[in-house]
Image (cartoon, rainbow, N blue to C red; front, top):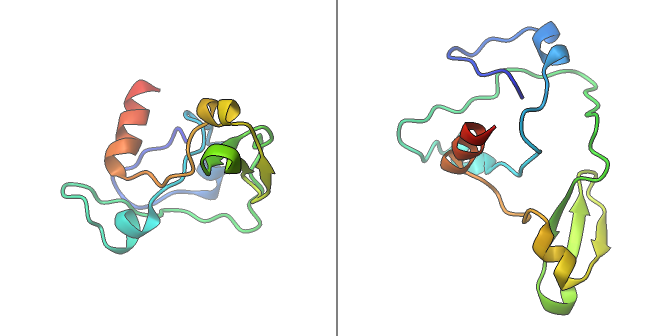
Length: 108
């Protein structure tokens, strides 16, 4: 989202008005939040919105599998069989760490 904070505080209004600046990605919550494995990074969850209902997730898929077992998964957890050629065009269902996320944000 278009909110980056130096301190862990955010209002519900800021959350409500936040806009996506990159496509959704799978975040490695274990290394970023639980173990804090990356030196020089301090990733925190700074907000929670009760009954949050994400918007504009239709048509966003992540690829998994190999060969004739290729699938795509939507943001709601549904799996669909796909061809290997379609698999090649989709982002992979693989968790991203701090380095990967920062690199994506630099491009945005």
